[in-house]
Image 1 (cartoon, rainbow, N blue to C red):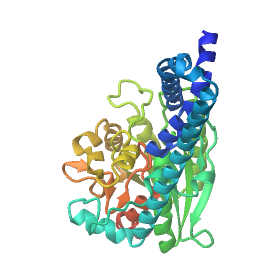
Image 2: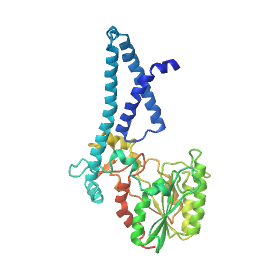
Image 3: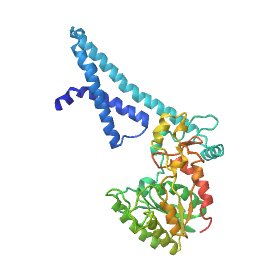
Image 4: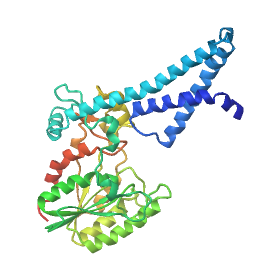
Length: 383
């Protein structure tokens, strides 16, 4: 086995780099562990094929036995491989630069573009201008900058506290608490808060909805549970005027007794605790779940992203926990912004030249900022 790997080692060396570069060009993201395994398998398959079909037969041809012919052929092959190695990155750089320019051309008046698109049936491009912002190849980085310091990793047993909005002489205190989906709303909420003289305090924890029950997942959920208990104590001491919360609604929780929707009682317990202490609770329903591989799809279908939309009847599957929790917490208010993401038939990937999602379920910062006006209307005007 070791000897066979050695036989194809040079072919593997030649193939692996083009394979990795091709993946980066097509997907616009860093390979995950499953991706890396798949890339290794593909590289090995190509290496074995080229060894069996090209390298070994060529070495046995009589033509190559003449003086100098083998050396010349080897040099030609190396030049071709080297050219391929340079051409693919150059092509990737060219595409990146062109899409950056297109993104820049539509980066102004994003609110107006999205509003016009929504009014015109969720069209992806306005005035025939086939440009998308943010650049799909850079979508993963289109996130609120504050996430670096204000969003805890899932495994941590504490949640960082950040203050936004009017922090000097606030007329009210607003808390934003929840997982990375609550983090998506932190910046838009803070913008409204600054206008109204409110201070915003965030408790944001990746993969960790603000729930009194444990998630059903991996070993990291204990950190989430411990962190939520500490946040619970902090909110009891802070006594905020308003608590804004949301979470990814496709997570699983331990079942409490015979409850039909596991996790509903855990949400309701915390919301009722807050309203009993005098806080208003404002529950934002989760954003629709996009189609699988949405960013990759847009990257591959830049000029025609309509095929990357998800049917509306599939985008809201398995979202029964929060409605059940709201029934048990009658003083909590809820709002959802479905009509900003979907029409009756589908949830598009691009709306008004704006890429809606940056990964499998997080909305781009660019699109989230178009919700400020909706939040301005939905949040209480005075606290």
